[in-house]
Amino acid sequence: MRNEILSRLPVDFPWQPHLHWLDSVDSTNSRVKAMAAAGAPHGTVLIAGQQTGGRGRLGRSFHSPPGSGLYLSVLLRPQCPPAALMHLTCAAAVAACNAVEETAGFRPGIKWTNDLVSGGKKLAGILTELGVDAAGRVDWAVVGIGINCTQEAADFPPELREMAGSLSMLAGRPVAPAAVAAAVIAALRRMDAELHTRKAAVLDQYRRDCITLGREVLVVRGDESRRGKALDIDENGGLLVEFSRGNRQTVTSGEVSVRGLYGYL
Ligand code: BTN
Image (cartoon, rainbow, N blue to C red; front, side, top):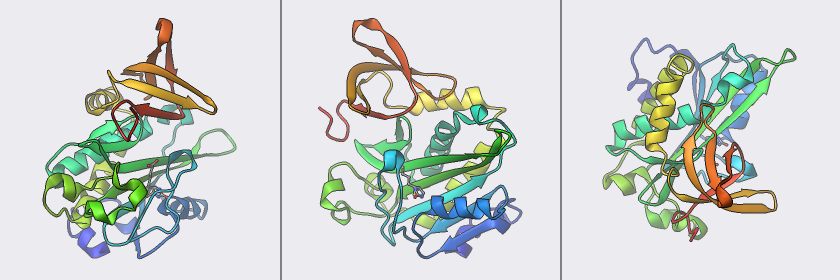
C-alpha cells in the first residue's frame, strides 16, 4: 500500500522519506503524537489499514474498519505561537475537500468545523491536536483525517447507517483508498506551505464549502443547548451565531448540530 501511494506522488515529494504505513494501529493520531515525542520530523505521515481505537472530536470514537477507509495523520512542526494555528482544522478541511474533488469527482461540503458531508451523509472527519513547548510555542501539531472510501450502506454498523456515507456511494463508482491517500497527502503539503501566506483565501474557500452557514443550528456546551442561526466564519475559523433576541456570539468549541442533518429536526 505504501508503494501504491508513493507511486501516485512526485518522485521528489518532500515528505516521501517520512511516509509510514501500518496494517493496524490503535489510532494514527496517538501513534504520530508518540513519534513526535520521539523526535519525528515535520512532514511525518502515518497511514493505517485499520484503527482499533480511532478517535474523533469531543472524546468520540471513529469507526475504522479494515479495507474500506483511509486513516491518516500528519505531523507538522510549525515555528509559531498556537494562536497562529487557530484556523488549522479549517485549512485541513479545505485540503480534504480538494483531495476528494480530485479523486471522487465531486466536492463535499463541510459541516463546521471538521466533518466532510455530501447528500446529508458524513464522509470524513478531522481531528487536530496540538502540543506546546515550555516557551509556549507550538512543539507539534497532528492533523488526522479519516475518510470512508469504499463502504456500501450495509457495511456501516446500524447506529451509523443513517448518517454515514462513503466516497464510492456518493460518486457511484469505486474510489480507491490509495488514490485518495496520495491526493490528501499532497493537499496537506500544499496547505502547510500556504498556512500563513494564504490564510484569508483559504478561509474564503472554507466559507464557500461550509454547509452550516445560513442554517439553523443547535449549539451544545455541557448541559446548555441554544438554538441560533449560523452567520459567518471568523478569521480564526470560529462560527458566528445569532441567537434569539439578536445577540451574536462566536462559537469556537463544543457540538453544533445543523437542522436537517444527522437526524436533528
Ligand atoms: C471526528 O469525526 O470527530 C473526527 C474523526 C477523525 C478521525 C481520524 S482517522 C485518522 C486519525 N486518527 C484518529 O484516531 N482520528 C483521526
